[in-house]
Image 1 (spheres, one colour):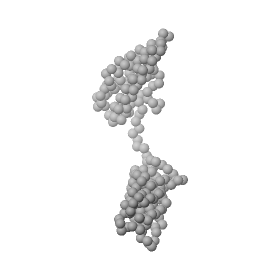
Image 2 (cartoon, helix red, strand yellow; image 1 turned 180 degrees about the vertical axis):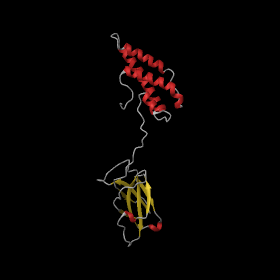
Image 3 (cartoon, rainbow, N blue to C red; image 1 turned 90 degrees about the vertical axis):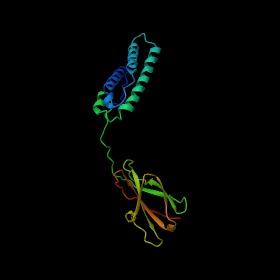
Image 4 (tube, rainbow, N blue to C red; image 1 turned 30 degrees about the vertical axis):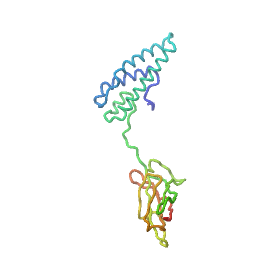
Length: 220
């Protein structure tokens, strides 16, 4: 089936219009929506007459223009009805869509894969005790927008002279964010401490991706 459900030829469009109008008039109450505009049948009748007239050698430019304008108006209103009342209506079955020559709705959920890429952040210092993280993708690692749903920021505060962590697994604190910019504000007594960070992508099922590169910043 074409991605556009509206037939291209005038004759097929006319027949499809009659089909949609007739089928919806019978079933709209079951769908719990209003009927198609009462004058739609008459408009399609007028369009059909112009289609037949344009097949004759006596047709003129006015006939063709009128036919095309009638089609434009009918198509616009039928599309609006279908998109607004039919396509997302849970009471409309796939059998209904099939009977109206409309696309069948795929009810299968789109699988969400596990994140594969890595993330890191640039750090800036907007104010006292504040760190701004601008999260970015690590070039050269896989990028999957659907899987890379958000970011899990692992971090830990370390005093001067305290042994530095060697992996993200040693960082005790974490927070989740969907934002690419995250402002962190620390306590006054934390000024001068070093914050080590490691970011992991995390998808909508809470599955994390690989650990990103470790980086650090001193709290101003």
